[in-house]
Length: 395
Ligand SMILES: *Cc1c(COP(=O)(O)O)cnc(C)c1O
Image (cartoon, rainbow, N blue to C red; front, side, top):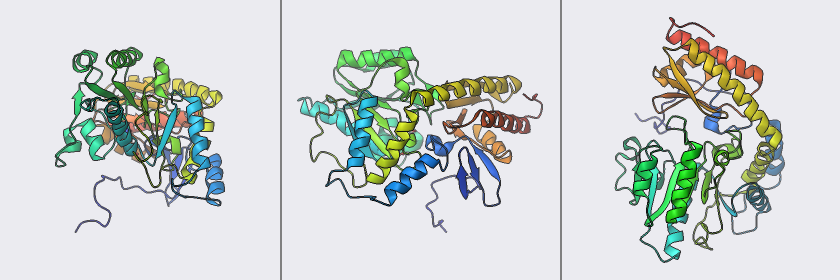
């Protein structure tokens, strides 16, 4: 008999009753160190007092009114985002997938309004993850995501990851847009180098193609800058944001330049829940906290500490780990064993991690993780690795 919850997930036999900062607490009181943070969602940890206060204050006033009316909380968050980023304008969603849909629509509409409706092709990359809608799976194109869901939305082509020669060969003045994660998350914590990002920007500028950066996972302070592309000193035309921006409340946003958004006039797009007062009040608090230079400096300091400890872990378990990659607190431990086995071994040590693409263990802790918790995380990962491959030494 089919389970009452549609069985589309492979769930671990764990559940939690309560969260506190970097910890999740099971009904029997067992405390798990959470290095998944709801897949980079709980950017400020569980039950963060500032966010609880922002939520409860707004919850007692107004949750939802629909976009038929002015929404001051939405206006405020949009103004903050425009002030802090490349963007001139923002559309709010409830998830990352919805940002992919709008990014695709916006890019195609741009060329339609410019009198080039045939300019529909969007270049994406293998290993990408942009969400689960029919548009987002067509963009990512992997067999695993699209199988059985045809016919797929046409107009997408996937290039080998970070292959600049392939991009040079594929892009032309017929290309609508290039859509890419600044750092691939599901694809295995695979960053684009600053040089590659500059090259992608330059190729888009030469051909007129719009650059869509998917920062749903790597954005909102995760890499130690407010958005990951800032490290390379480039800006996109359109950016997808979700996950961390709500700190656990469902919230996403598409940020765009005035030029890229020029086709999106009244009636061309909408959402019932998107930009509701409750989500935007929380998002504004998250953005206030994360965009503080002192907060980001702490993320960078802790990231350097964590990375150094992880390099030690890799050196101590050469039969389990191959190396560390990523940026800031978006780290991948590249594995020689199946990452899913390590995740499972971690459960026994009461530490939560996330596998990525059969090759890496993803570490996406709350950005508020403490130095002591980083040390504790490395101890527990060490124990998990030892349990998997008892021959290796210990850090
Ligand atoms: C999670 C994710 C999405 C999809 O977001 P949902 O909120 O699950 O719809 C899109 N792009 C990237 C890079 C993601 O990590």
